[in-house]
Length: 139
Ligand code: FES
Image (cartoon, rainbow, N blue to C red):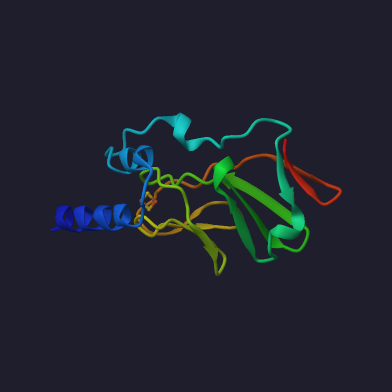
């Protein structure tokens, strides 16, 4: 039965994607994904964006950078890889204090990236950032 559930949830996740074969391959790979897919597409000095884009108590996903930046408390910014540690989908939203993956509904804390629900067992990897003059930059 769990196999049936797993297949159903994988298909449900795939149905939400219109294109993106690499993502589908990552989701269906059965856990053999490479570590390269879990790292943000950033390097030191990459400008992420203005702090005003990141709501207090929430966060913003920078899909092209594969990065999620959160602001758990006013003036405190955290950043994580946007690649879900379950099967490699990119997280899709930030809501009610968690970073949420659309594929199998894993949830991660906006404060430290720890798992708060769903099938993921590892936290989102942290990414070092600096904040200066209202701009977020990868450290
Ligand atoms: S890939 Fe399965 S919950 Fe994110």
